[in-house]
Length: 401
Image (cartoon, rainbow, N blue to C red; front, side, top):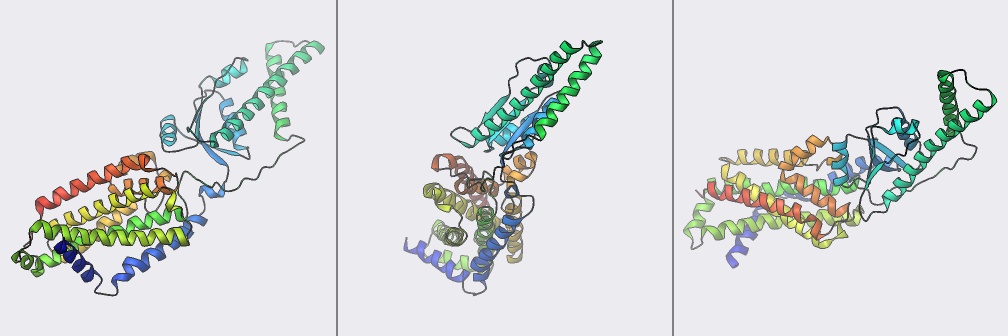
């Protein structure tokens, strides 16, 4: 144990032997977290510009009244319909969307013929938000029903006063009555204006809730993958060869170096979490147990990947290039720089092949969605699977000389 601690501490001392290291370890991560978070908080086109409750709508209607229903919902002060395909809607519900409304293909024809209509609404369990969505849908549906009822009654009364010459004249009168009733609903004598506060628990990370975990993933990856450069430098400088001469096993040397690099990553993560929580108001502490599991899992996958890169790199310059390349690619593609939810579904599925994606999903689940230990176990298990893979490949190709 003493040898392990000594090797780990020696690596930490070497890492921070140059004061400039603190710039990349501490200063830049904090600065970028604040700047990017502030930009995302005030950026145009974010959901914060429209505080209404968003939900997904799938319109299969073959006529025009499905679109009219959506138009009525868009005029609501409380909800905001977002049209998607059925596949995308189901995927978005699985990822935490408030609700999904499905308008059937015969919606218009049944409405015109006075037949009963059923709308399918999928909502999140144990979530009170869809109650407001359901009420808004009922209001819009009733509005359409009243419009058709008024038009039908108008035809009946007109028929009593003067019979229609033929069916086409009656149909024209019906359409005109329907249009007049719609116009009357568009400008009612009494209007209610509702103001909603910004949603406290959004399903999609934004502002500092996005930049805090995103910059953590970005900069901690640089720290953890940086172990490859140190390993190559010591191998080329003969340090590892001299360690092998001492009565120290290879496993002890390797474990000590892994502990040193992993510890640096954990310390950096704790600093960024404290900064995000105490200074920026990010709710990192919703589930300490789930957060701890995610931090350890992410630390292990980054450390293992750094060791694997060190096994393949031949020069220190090459190791440094691989560190920069992999850390930037993994962070940018894995949702560390912008929410994955704003990207196309195909992209979201493709980047699930990256460990950084699962790290961001897990951190976002803890911070934004308030999920606990049980809910984040799949993300943690996948990260640990990546760790085993990287570690196995690294050990297989590792050279101490």
